[in-house]
Image (cartoon, rainbow, N blue to C red; front, side, top):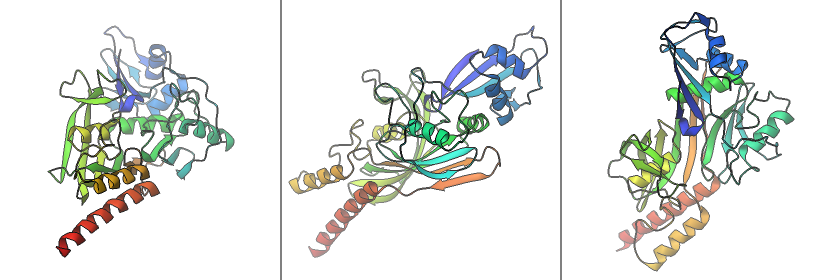
Length: 349
């Protein structure tokens, strides 16, 4: 049995190659024996939602496992530091909710799930409270870990995130993220302007061997996981540019790392070199302008603007979009004003 970590370390793909001497056995019973950490309900939800495949085909619970079958299962991963979480009455901006899914507009500054040093005040704490307080189904076996999460966005990134409210939806969404059939676009303000107005960044991202809190681009697939980002310049603003970025994969810090690797770090991104003047003049007036911009938005200028996925139960294609928060809007307006003032000076000369 092989296990591969996927999608920002929130999903695992388990691969089982059935022995030559295996007797016919229902796949749900076979997996219950092989995957002792997964409950019967999780296994059955995974099968019915399409997260279990045999020889690259979906099957039903009564499928009989045969010798040499190739079984793939996509499951949400448990956190190594998981513990019992306490729900907290923290306001969350709910964009859409039904009995299966919850779409949230996360503010910048909120951590998505608990970790070392962040056991409280997270989106997950708010979700646990919301699910209990509204008499909604609580995720079986997940409320003490990362309830319903199949993807995440960084603490200081704002925008859309979907979470599942039951085991079936969790398995269904996990398969969509694994298959890259979801659609996620981000607005990113970066230093400079990529020479090509649009393009695709494809390489491998892994943990920086020298600084463990950072991620790094590697050309060797042995040191990282495949990461693919599509980008397009939608508004050049002289020393900075507003980009639309679409994720094909979802690695930790992916957009931040990819654009920094291109030489265009996100404005305000301290971890990847964007919180200093990367492009522009040496004049004090310009330096003061940049400092004022950094005060408006003292973290990376990145916003998860749109999210699309297939509804687990209805099969309807769902599409959501939210505007950037006021700080992001103010930052853009400051740079637009700077560009206009430069144009005015050139016309007066």
